[in-house]
Image (tube, rainbow, N blue to C red; front, side, top):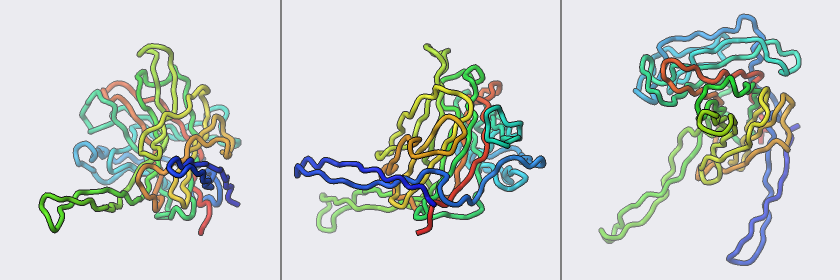
Length: 316
């Protein structure tokens, strides 16, 4: 049964001096039926790098064929290319009960192959749900366990290091000027709808003591009701964390995080938002971002994940 939390938010209507209440429903990630996932326990699990990798976001080069895992669940992004190191490793201490293997993801030469920019660049690793588009009326969600290393093992620079994101098809509304039929000097505005992919998500950002103060890390959430990035909670505990995101039929996205490997609950919600002037329609995939300085020498922070899964919360 889908775990649904009902919260009441009150909006104060200053113009009329009245108060209205609206029920907001939040689906806890991991609710409903699991439709896809990977536990990395297969000893034959491997990743096929088909180099050179893609970098079409920078130079319009896709460089087919794309990299893919042996089980077909993970594949290279045609937009940015896959991380340089994708390897099955022993599960770090404190992981899910019974887990013996997890996935290490790390990169060094992000950006255009053979080009060092000395600027932060990212590589992407995409998950194949094998289910096609999932309407948000089904309240899809995903969960993932992420091993956050101790701060002395991070790439020594202040910047975003890791991203966990959705690919969601949505309609965006824009207003454009148009000339009046009766006067060249008069203009009116028309609403234009554009259907395109959007990429909400959660990022982990590091502040290095090399830039003053002490090492620290925190979440950044993309995005709030106005499409702005929001600073989330500080990461005061390293080791395993459980992250999750869900979509609900009202077009909202919900972000969850907690230290440890226990299932998420309603108390672990960080933010719910309408994601700006966007109308979500279908969930397509989730993916991971790994960022490095791309200086030809420095490896990114080593990120380890386990037990990622996709769920259908309900069918309406």
